[in-house]
Length: 202
Image (cartoon, rainbow, N blue to C red; front, side, top):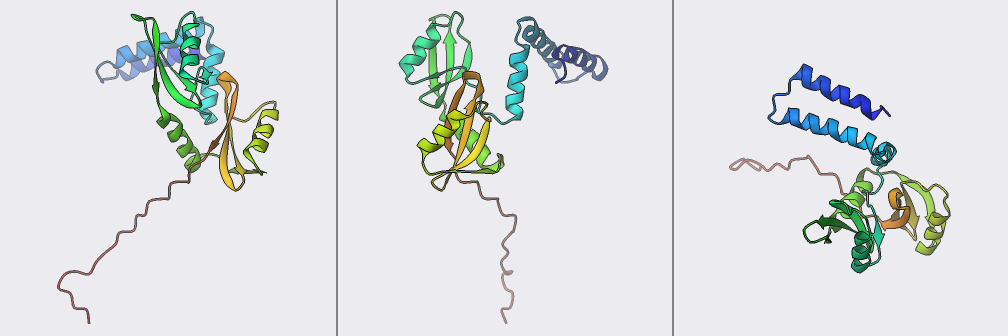
């Protein structure tokens, strides 16, 4: 992966050579360069590279924590020395947006099941091909998944004749089985035509 610091020079060259005409583009480039400096100077380079690799591997959307209940989530976020302004967390395997409000000192949670729905639909349509692994029950598949020393980010398996995605949330070291929805059928481009009015049907 190209060193992050090198990208600051690339952004500066774009600003100098291409002279972006879009209003606010110069400020946007400066913010991007500042974000790169922050990632490197705060010691988060490896975390960033890990995140990019997870995107390339079509890993599940990044979540910073997993909790069984909303009460556990509230306690867990409150225990953080500096709660994130906005982040995804899993509560009972459902994605939630965790939003910290400094004025109240509380983190508010908004359920976002559509995050997982979109991810699984994309995996069903554009994700990995079936691996050929087959299990008689979900318990058997879970036992296999938890025995993997280095689980794949996602692999399609068969459980009792139904497709499942064995997924790994690497940031929180969480392994889970998601039932896959049916693939979206391709849309037809064939236009139906009808005879012109008044034509002879001889």
